[in-house]
Image (cartoon, rainbow, N blue to C red):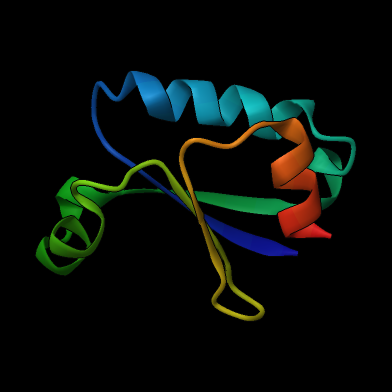
Length: 77
């Protein structure tokens, strides 16, 4: 599964979300692309107050912080 992981510079919540993702049982099976929202004005306006956000590229569904391992696993299954 391909995922977009919207992040920002010096975002401690993004670090926490990344840790949660790596703890999920299927983490090895996902192709995660980290995207710094500061690199794109449109993304900054969409996600600036919401990061970290995980987006499934197969169906466009999004999971915003806060989430735990169980919630991430359910979202990605």
